Image 1 (tube, rainbow, N blue to C red):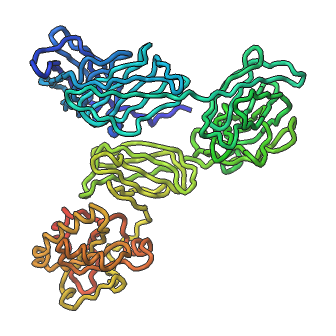
Image 2 (spheres, rainbow, N blue to C red; image 1 turned 180 degrees about the vertical axis):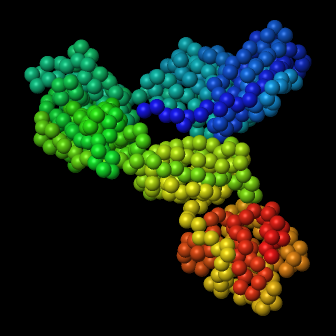
Image 3 (cartoon, rainbow, N blue to C red; image 1 turned 90 degrees about the vertical axis):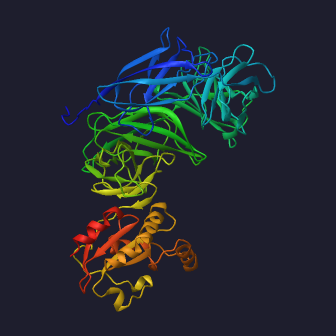
Length: 602
């Protein structure tokens, strides 16, 4: 089936031109390799492109045409297998469409050295070809050890986390940050532990060695194949093998398998192939119609760990799948199944009963997938209620629902839409916690529209229960008792807030600054804390921040109260007319819109 709804929009392009210079002398430096990529590449998923590598010419000049408009970043390219000759701070360049930005300067410095020596733990033998990296706020560097086990990392002064990894060795990370000081060489000694190796052999029922058989040590062990003599060596992680290792050999072509639990890792394991189960099942839609070309894979589940079996098949045109050479499960372990099919929500690591007599067929019940035929749309706003443009959005299932993982980004108005998801619970994340404004989270349902995510907050989307056009509910349950003078011929402004959330605190403080102005406009302000907290703590916060309004607090079930009042996010503003019934005229607006809403409430 051909899709006709895919539209690729290329960004407007511009050019950059600049000069590479040495910091102390200001002289141009030739032949320097630079990388150019999207700024905030992780967040700006709309503007990603392959990293461009360019070289400064003999005069230190570099040029790069055809860059997308917006913010781009220039950095020194990391050299391969050698120590960098320079360091430089990243340069942010704002590219304008159809124009050349030609005043760019990349300033090079010599920096300081972290001198590393990498030895094998126990033997203290120097290790060649080990990758060592250092990452910090000031910069980063990567290099590989030589035959003497040494290398140098050139970095700016600052604090760094250091890492090392080599083939056949357990990855290493420094316990304490590495402190690099100006004018000093920092020494770093690294000891790497070898992976533990499990040896063994695979034979058939007649005692003959079997070659090219897949062998996996569960959990988290290596995937190996037997050699011509039926022998294998598989890596395993000793700290995860406290209850023993299940060593599995599979020969799917002949539907033979062997499974042994070993706790004596220093002794060779002998596996004898024998009959195993053939596992059959069907993947269907909710109507029982088979789904073709679904990817079905099995995992081994042991000691609360999931371990890959390298067992994956596709369903046939009627949705049936077959796994050969599967050892029957027992009380020590079981199997989990994962299913992915275009147009449907996935099943991930669902427990599946694979039992029966070896040499027979185990038929598993049909597994039904939920169609991915609905969408969700909405808006992302910042703490001040302003639309957040080009913010990444991530969607995952919630409460065990089978939602596909999806991602997109907001447009220039902060709006987004994610299609082809399933009905049911989901969780949306906007932005990253470490990004400006922080991350916003929202629980919702597949099919919801016009949801609202506030950066720095976590909330739940509920069907909108609008109060507009209705009489304002009573305030008595919030512990607020107003006099006739407070309400007669007055507009009422209700603000639901949470003192633990920065956007709410900001709104309250700004409202307090407008208290006299609002009073002159015949507006009575009431603020309601959105959840039940210690009254004394709330009073202290109100006094500390000079909040001059009547302050109440939600009692009991906060979610039911928020639904009854139509509260979708915090802070939440509600404005009434100045008639005797106090009919709600506006709700859910930004503080910056308050004057317009007051003027319109007539």
